Each structure stands twice: as C-alpha cells, then as structure tokens.
Image: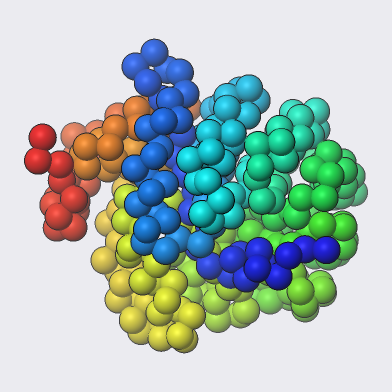
Length: 303
C-alpha cells in the first residue's frame, strides 16, 4: 500500500541535489548541509539523491550508496527522500537495497541508457528493482517515450509504482499515456520549471528542479502559482530564471550541472567541480552571465 502522504508529496517539487566533491575528487556529502537546509526551509516537498543533477552516471555505485546514506541522515525525516537507482541491473538492485537500508522513502528508477533496450526488457528491469526495494514505492524516470505507450502502461502496472517522472517535451503524448494508466499514478513534469506549465496543462502535477540548489524560494513560488492555475504568474516567474536555464542547456546540456555548481561557488557554498564528461569550468562568458544573474538575485558571496 503506497502512503497517501507520499503520493501528495510527489505532486510538489522534487528537488535534485548536487553531489559535492572535494579537492581530491572524493565525494564530500557534508557540503550538502546548507543546500538541504535551505531547500527544506523554503518549502521544497521532496529531495532526491543520485539524480542527474547529482551526476549519477559520474558516480561509482559505492559513491552513490554513500550519498543516499548521507542525504537521509542530513534530511532527518523532515521531507521524503527519493533515491535514484539505475545502470546495470546488478548495480540498480544493489543500490535499491542500500537505499532502503539508508531510510529512503522511495526509489527513482533511471531509464536504462543501454544501447540495446527491449521494451519487455525494461519491464523486467523495473520488476527486478521493485523486488530488490522490498516494498519501497517506485518513481519511473522516463527521459524519452520511445519504448511505446503500451510498455509505459505495463510499467505502471508493476506493483509499487507510484509515479512517473516524464522528462520528454511531448505533452500530448503524456496525456495519452496518462489515459492508459491507473488514475492513482502521479505524473510529474521531469523537465524542470520551464516545461512545467505545458505539462501541467495536460494533467501532470509537480515538477523536478535543479534550481532548488540555488533558489529554492523561486521554485516554490512557481509551484504555488501553477497549483493555483495562475499560468500568467508562473510564466512571469519562469522568465526570471530563463538565463540560468539557458546557461545550463549550452554545450549539448553539458553545462547543466556546471551552472548549478558554479552558482553555488559564487554563493560561498562550494560543492566542488563537476566530473567529466560534464563541462568544467564555465567559459569566461558563461561565468560572467551567471555572475550578473546572481548579483540581480542578491546571492553573490561577499567573500
């Protein structure tokens, strides 16, 4: 039985935490404390460890286990913790078990990036992870809908699936997928604030956000506007963060996490660099644009 309070939380903001590194390229989870505290104080509904803003594919499985344990400890039950799992089926199941042991509220299953993915193989993949999670609810993370709507509907019938993070810019396809599935499934906008309005318009609720590492208050205000159906206010607020998202989208999205971590450094909350193949550092022009934006937000560190 999936807890009603967790389903409700899924309709809020799922804030994807960065993974901090130290000067020796070791994970440094203690550097997350200000990010976590700031997000919870602002009203972010769920926090996510080992998401893509957390450089999931740049971590070893052992590092991902460290991050979910530390995130759970630092959150301390104040909000639900969604733990990302994925890669090979062995790694995904091991991380599902570790996340359960850490006290995660639910698992977010990354869509397999393997070049040879069969639709029925994805179903088997999710079923195995659900078994390893031993009762933890699942959030399916779909970065594309190429596996087909029939397969998506079958995935949503796997016991324990509570929600789907739809990270494809295809709102009409999303609406079709929703019609095929149990109405209790929560469909979450997986393309952050900028795509939240069109996905909301067809029935998605809530959205994922990397902005929460930097401006959780802005993300929460956007969510509140969308919840009220005030699309005009939401679009005005989203316009104020367009430069941030534009920098993140450059170099084939290779500066996505780079912009977030660079902003944190400028704020005096250094979480280290990103790992290759992500871009690091920002170019001089990108850094200047980011500095100007943070100055307008009054977030530049005085140091």
